[in-house]
Image 1 (tube, rainbow, N blue to C red):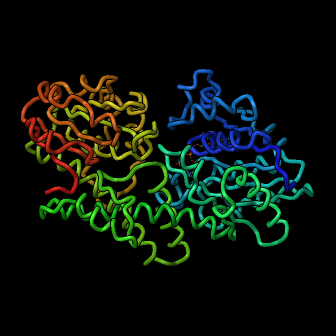
Image 2: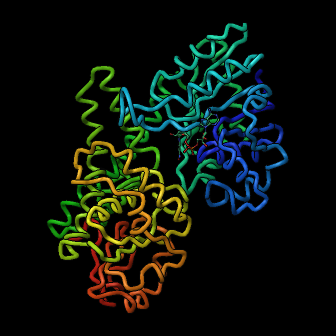
Image 3: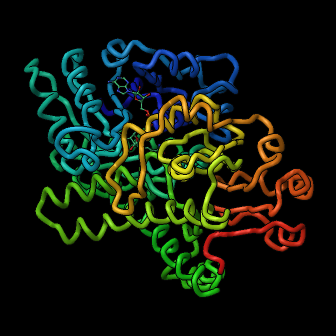
Amino acid sequence: PSKITKIACIGAGYVGGPTMSVIAQQCPHIQVTVVDLNVQRIAAWNDPDLSKLPVYEPGLDEVVGEARGRNLFFSTDVDKAIHEAQMIFMAVNTPTKTFGVGRGMAADLKYVELCARQIARVADEDKIIVEKSTLPVRTAESIKTILESETKGIKFKVLSNPEFLAEGTAIEDLYKSDRVLIGGDEDEDGQIAIQALVDVYANWIPREKIITTRLWSSELSKLTANAFLAQRISSINSISALCEQTGADVDEVARAIGMDTRIGSKFLKSSVGFGGSCFQKDILNLVYLCHHFNLPEVANYWEQVVILNDYQKHRFAKRIIDKLFNTVSGKKITFLGWAFKKDTNDTRESAAIYVADELLQDRAEIHIFDPKVSEEQVHSDLVYLQKHRRSQATAYEYEEITSEEIKKLVVVHTDPYSAMEKAHAIAVLTEWDEFKTYDWQKVYDTMLKPAFVFDGRNILDRTKLTEIGFNLHSIGKG
Ligand code: NAI
């Protein structure tokens, strides 16, 4: 079919939810059904109260409010959605394997494989299958093999259409994508399938921004994009360590180099380290692929980006302990922020989790305020880490902390001032805008002295806080 009127998307997460909502909003003539096995998640997507959507993204509530019930539907009936759609997106999670072959490195493709098997079983008409999840290069081949295993005489075309949105700005990014990338087979059927997907995006994306490539280039471009982005952060973070030793200021260095148009000014903000569900996972996936294809030098080159990031998180935690006279045991340490970046409720791989874990090794009492993250989420992130540690190159000495201890030592507040009251130290872990405008004099007055602040995002006003009397430590400032 060249004119698509029914789309299904398997996976109603941070990618499936926002991307499909925007497609539905921009293409009122296309019926879009997003399905998921997770019943609670689907119920939240259908909640009449738009502030209860399972994904927090600025502007998402309005988009869903406009399209839901019109041509946008959220459902748990996966078979029905597969059956009806001409085009099926796979936006399921592809986490790092936590066991078996490739543990701690390779992408776990079990969810993708299950989707492919389900499609193969249910479909009784030709379908276009779109890889929206980030996948190792050549996954489309495996998907095709599975799809074609049920010989029913129907045709499947597999396209790769990786998603480049950034959490926190997803809606803006989807409206004005830098580019949309579609990879497909070079034969005639492949070209027809590509054109069908181009036509969907062309409803709001200018044609010249929609680029088409071979399947393998498209799959590999997504891993490469994330590797390059993360590499910039690790590069500037490596320099931040040198700045702290020498008295140079990493923000000044970033500004100076960023004005060179060959380097560019974006993505040069030094911090406690990158987080999020993608960068680390996708680089490890790339590293694994390189080893698989017997390219150890290439693998080691990219692995260093992750190792440096582990080091940056560790350095931050260690600095807190060092400055607090070499122990945080029994001390109240307040975290401002738990999400991996501002304007999202996503906490996956957030630097905060690792910094908290390292302070908990010394039995600190951690008090947290984040505008969008619940206590349940914080506790479950810490419990999860105890079971699924990667053998990090820069591993600190650790022991497993029990769930009981986590519940006892980690308190989540709904008011930032109560979180900071009587604290020995405050650590900024997420760059939420509201942290800049707190009444810092009031905070200072209620804290224990010396009042330490560790700004892991370099967002606070250094002059002002120092004048108030804070003992302020920023990233990459000697
Ligand atoms: P997520 O974990 O938020 O969502 C995935 C959803 O798929 C879950 O709700 C899960 O229940 C569902 N699911 C898994 N298997 C299923 C099945 N067989 N049938 C029905 N539903 C199933 O993951 P997220 O963040 O949306 O990521 C999805 C993919 O997109 C990943 O491959 C990721 O690498 C990629 N990606 C993520 C970006 C992000 O910012 N989070 C950006 C670009 C790509």
